[in-house]
Length: 250
Image (tube, rainbow, N blue to C red):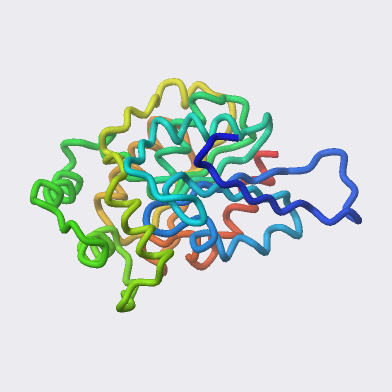
């Protein structure tokens, strides 16, 4: 296992007998780790084998001085098995797009609002979003969250002081390589035989622009789930949408 990737598996009960076990692999985004991001998906463990990957730099793993989506894509790819259904949210969606291109034997790929802004440069909403990062950014965790969370569509109320896990998540976001630098291999992903699903939340024109490009270039399905902003794993209908897609893909 890669040194900084924390894996938690939820296996089907032994009483469930099946010749083919459908495995869902989840990759979280920025600030929140796997435990906090995928809380609502734990219930899917009654029907699927679940694997929750906590990216390096996030608790319970140690803090890192630098986090790179390319390196983490390689780590995720090493964890994948043939037929896995890969599910990535936000920064984890960028990691998942990169990992899927390296491991084109998946059962399916689902990404929710990946900040892969390079695929939509020139779009006015994307350019306006990116302009916020042209200024010096806050260099302490609480101020960075106060800047970052509203920008990506989160209404989280920040406690004071920050709990240790949230502070570590904020520090992790501060050292992440900017996802707009990611080169998404759209042609290779489009040619890969597994189905793709792109989920958005109808709250951000910049994220909508990225999702529009991915749908067009990858031949992906598109679902819009309003009600949770960027926190799409908590959006009404997310689990039902994911289950329906995975079942059809299987």
